[in-house]
Image (cartoon, rainbow, N blue to C red; front, side, top):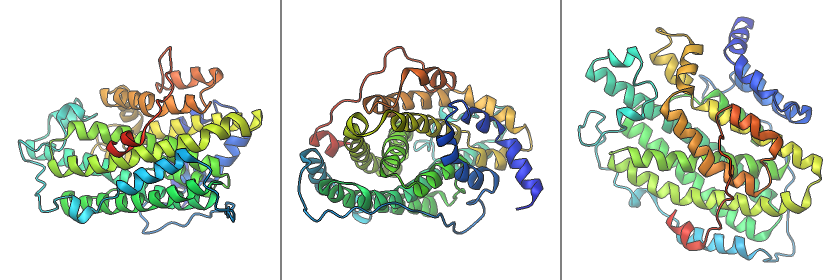
Length: 381
């Protein structure tokens, strides 16, 4: 990549870099420097068929085979009973027609750009195409995230300390492979469109895969990415009238609920009893950086470049989306699906609340703890 492209990428992402230094934790910023350079400046995954990420972590063998975690054992049992086959569980013969009046992919009110002049002046066919493209962008990012989750789940299975966690982790690897399969199939055969990975999502996945700390992998994937996905899947399923997508998401949501719960069970004891205060502070600041990247992921820059870059600046686009109702819904997702779990595992300290609130990720006086889930809950999603 030439210097001009690097400087352009630096300019486009200057607000992200400015927000990232709010926490002023040099250890956290150093750990994210490599992923940020590769993702934002070099755009290591854009326009490429493959990307390699160096990964090092300790592999933990348990020669005692002690079954010491009944909570994880129950989760493992629920996961075994909930396995499903995408070929038989879903009716792939259904036709997906973006212009079908009774099977709307997404309602217009759900589109964060619906009130822009470029959309309002578009023809009906152009509006249908933008809606198809927007859903394709959303599902493309889910596809890329699921591939990251597949690899992270494999790492977590080798790194987690408890045999019951390893056994459950083996079922999550299967879950994530199935999710890659269904999202890729839907994008390829139904929407016939797929986008590159968003730079913010790439930085998150790069940071997770290249970090040697097993608990940070849990934190980033199980709590942050899977938690956000759980909320986003639920929101899209409520909005869409497309029956195949509704049913696909119903199955995926059931899996994701278990994955998030796995992260909470694995980290709650660790962050309460095992870490020194300085180590816990690093995780708190790292979680904030992940929240920032997850928020910026939904600025849909790849969609903007295709449909709106000719009509408005990226700064104007970002400002519009950050004030849109869809972004407010996302902040609610952060609250209901991620923030309570972060509180439960001691990762929302009072010192960081102003930063979360200033970024629009949290503006609530009281943060409830995440509820305890039963095996029945996890079977139902």
